[in-house]
Image 1 (cartoon, rainbow, N blue to C red):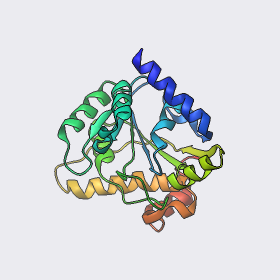
Image 2: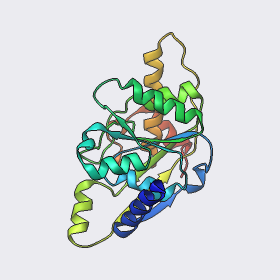
Image 3: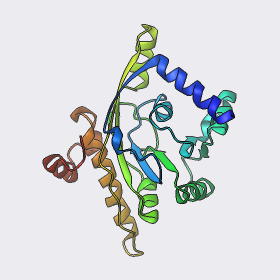
Length: 226
């Protein structure tokens, strides 16, 4: 009951302040484990998940710094979120994520690890690629535009709803990582995930991946979805 009420509140708030255009929604599985890897623009991003996905096994990571807000502590607990230390190796959080993914949960993660202050892609971290390769589950690249905090506040001050566009790319899997050159392979996998996100974004938002050779390949072959 608490979960349903918390989800209702998030859904109500998001519907009041945003209008959403989604491309590739059919690519999001309704059951089974997967990792949705997205760029991270603003504080509204997590709320969009509960509009798009009608599942009770969503795995959402939330930075420890938000624990100081009572309403967020209640919300994260009610939605079964996982608190994570972004600045240190949080093995407890990782074990929790692995266990829930093995049970078929859907992990929503921003490989950048933090909001982009410019709206452009930052360098990705290896957490998503490690989990995808270890478990052999699909990765779905997701690109968001319109949720930058500055733009959100500007619209809200004018009592205007925020137009948000979401693009979901084709799912793909990553082979297991061997013991040799592990860090090198995980970096390649991370670049693959980030370039697939970049391919779904407008050129001005591609950031550090704008000139990546893999992005150029994806754009030429259109192997990333619409």
